[in-house]
Image (cartoon, rainbow, N blue to C red; front, side, top):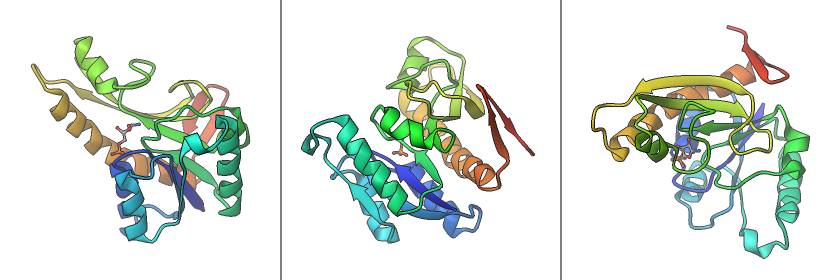
Length: 200
Ligand code: GRF
């Protein structure tokens, strides 16, 4: 069972997934990193771990469709069963969603459908929310709108800073994402319309 991770930045979730594989908690092969930012730290992490990567510059392609077609080609070449978005900062369109619907998941730092899009942690603080969390969901072409697989909630502290909340959310992400990927690996996640059932 081979997964591809898509990331644009530091890649702490990529690292957590790699570590879970090494520790034997996650029974998948990390077949490919896809990254749209050649300078991103996640590229070094993949190199160090000996994981192949497809790193591209979006502006070197004439359209989003063109680079997404190239990505689909690479996914097929590497025989990828599941696409795992982990801080991939680009909207994904039907070129990618259609062939991988139900086989592409994302992690988002809020309890969706609250606070989709960028800066979800800051959005929660600006709204004075008392509770926020982490969501793992299937990707459907919208911005953080796909069917929800798993959520973890946490209480926001009185006067808590964005840095502190971000750090606590990351910690939850690093535990939850490998766990959910393992559920998918074990074929325990069933998608039925908008509803997802996890067989425990
Ligand atoms: C995470 O908070 C994830 O929820 C969001 O982007 C961030 C990626 O962080 N989609 P990292 O690159 O994995 O450290």
